[in-house]
Length: 242
Image (cartoon, rainbow, N blue to C red; front, side, top):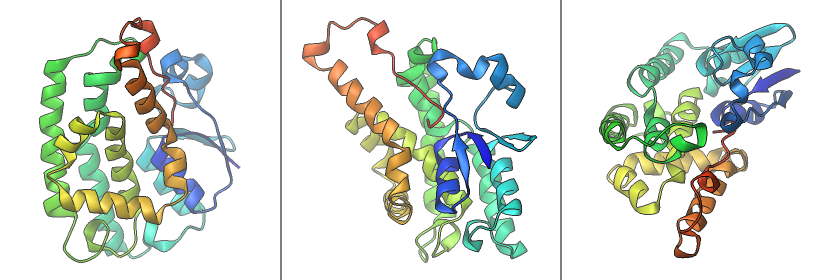
């Protein structure tokens, strides 16, 4: 059995392929990723990480490559065809090079930083939004094609779809107007995200439930009735599923 300290797209990959695993949540708001116990699993003290027996591994893309090599999974996720796999690898590498913090960075800087003891930074958030929009434009014009519902013109999703869809889902915690301002112009990205949610049902909604809960909690706390709440009460619980 795999023991996992996971992010949500990685969790989906495990569930969708029937891999037996035990999920271990890491509460970021309580700095559990800095505990000595977690450092034994991942010395960099970031999520995700896995333990497969005595073998320990971090970095989501490295983990999914390992799982695809060790466990029998559907070929469309990570094809054995080297040409198809190379194309998926190019998306994964682009993701980490051009979309390193992506929506999560923007959401953190503009909204959730206080939950992990950091101040909000509107100036950095504005820069992050520009990078985010430029990256969404590239997904819209390069990685999504007229044929096929998924990245690279494929009719079935790959690990690249999982990874990018998870990143973009971080925008769910934003106010609807802000989310629409960012995602609204990218119709192809929006349709692809909807298709990805549909094909990964019901796991997609399950693993992203924490995002919807955070958004609902924020809406209650920012309503006129809750406007007198203290700063400490506005902190949000952030777990490794984020």
